[in-house]
Amino acid sequence: MKSFLSLFYLILILVGFYGIFNKVESKHSETQKITLFSEAFGNKNHPAILLNAGAGSQSIVWADVFCKKLAEKRYFVIRYDYRDTGLSSQVQDEITPYTIHDLAKDALNILKKYHIQKGHIVGFSMGGQIAQFLGAYYPDHVLSLILIGTSTDFKPGFDAFEGKFKNEGLSPPNQNYVTWATRQVDLDAQTLDEKVEDYIKTWRYLDGNSPRFNKDYYRNEGIRNYTRTKLHKPYLKHARAMKSSFKDHKKAPSLIKSPTLILQGAQDPVFGIDHGKKLNSQIKNSTLLIWDDFAHAISPQNFDRIIEEIDRFIKSHF
Image (cartoon, rainbow, N blue to C red):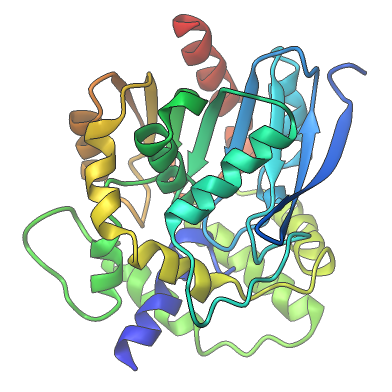
């Protein structure tokens, strides 16, 4: 039971419970009878950027305005729903659960659908794990990696929610966050308004209780999150995928050869600064950027500077 709860709790960590340039193209890609929904922004002739969200999150965590602004930098920007999220297929995986390798292959199929051989891969939280797998195990399809709020090792998070706090290895999630997230499990939101209020509270916490937190933005995103799809419980499946991939994840960073930018927040309650530093030490061709006021959310007050750093990094290497 404790192990089961740890899977659920960890997802609270990783997702929070849950014009040429303005042209948007939507597609469904099929892989092994799984249909994946994606949208693209910008000109197909520009370099491709594939956005990978956190565990359990829909593609819309990468907001429309974020994608459009990034496309205005002369990129072809793609966001997509993971299996079991958004408008993609629900997968019956009780017999053979999928792994991060499977999710990485899904990402490759998205690129293939748009006839893209190589792309720049952006990954947030679990999306950063997927990005690392792409860079390590499928390098022929990767130009560069941008890793945001992620780690070389997710095991400390699982251990923390099982009550196993260790004094060695990478730091666990913030103890206050573990306590707070555990309490969230007891919430029994039923109505749309209740769910949206929980959504706002969760992202406020993941955003480090920033004084610039945009409540109206997250209210609108929460409504969209819960009215866009009926698939609202992918968390355990994504957690199983992460937990089954610890071994390959630990090996991945040292195998990455693509230029890599690591964005780490000093206020991140999930992955402390040591996680970003560890990534930086293990990925040979990497650059670490630490923001003192950044936490664990792709929030609107950070859109412009995230976009600027992505653009600066890519154009400095290509």
